[in-house]
Length: 440
Ligand SMILES: *Cc1c(COP(=O)(O)O)cnc(C)c1O
Image (cartoon, rainbow, N blue to C red):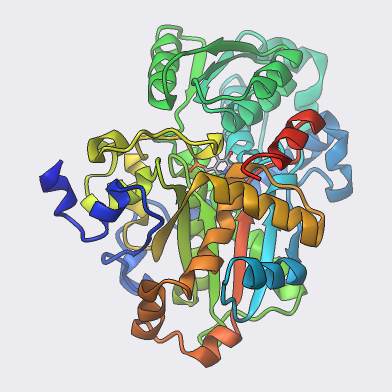
């Protein structure tokens, strides 16, 4: 362990489960940072076009998406009362405008997983239907919702390993298409998420083990069945691209709201991170769209900062949080991934500004603060998104970093900081009431 901790000065504090703020020494300007990546803007546009083709199908299966004509998208909203409360109660200094990206309220899955997870199921669906000669790109994809097509898809199985939300997104979307679905749930998964999936006819297999083991078991079972497709959260390029489309949508929303992003108006974004797919995909998209004017921080629990450990050691998926003496245990089930995605870590190495970590009780303090100030409910994992704005100018490392990269007081005053709210809308009332009383 000692040799691991020597790889970056932050790691001894990470190993002591302190709340840290770390900046990525491998960050590059986009002119070089985006150059060598295996994916580009054309891949994001391709994913965006596929989602547009599927919109009539989504609208047919999920009437809740009718107001947006089958596009799954969430509001971006200023949260001035929360900003004030964070400054008052948590001694934060937040210049500029604090905004919330409400992926917590995305249709169908109630979490950011409605982006990547549903996209991957749709991509697989298109592949199968086209291979079988049942679909052309120019067709109205609503035809995929007919009984004959459901019959076709019912011969196939989709499987996934999950701590909860990915399973809900893949499970609900796959069941809607007509697939047999098996979700392999890790020990962290909340009971209500398993119950909800079973009510959609999804087979849920529960493990006493962590997320990594659930993925391994799911992958093995799926590989043994030629009719089964495995959604590989640790390595999936499709999931990643589904998440990346968020950046194009955000660009339009910022424009609509008259919020500039340029050299004098920097955009800061904090995204809660588990295995890395969701925040990594969003980051990749944001850097493609906003270039060097966007600065993305990931936020992870102090006992499970897997992406931070992977990035700061440079070992990515070759290291897990237990290797630096942490437990990997956290109330934030959406972030409880002890080993980061190697694929994502390598792609975002030149793009990610840095990371913050957060102690579990604070997730609940932020949750109550948001309810009190804005009457918006987020699940605990999603509340990690406030830690970036709260810590950036509170910790000396943050102030120093701002100076180093030229984020002057004037620019910060013109900035927008987006807390990316990754989940919450599907939390049942009784669970929510229990959350509201935690760590009081
Ligand atoms: C999945 C999830 C994340 C993080 O996504 P990863 O792809 O695991 O990094 C964050 N918040 C919530 C609520 C999630 O469900």
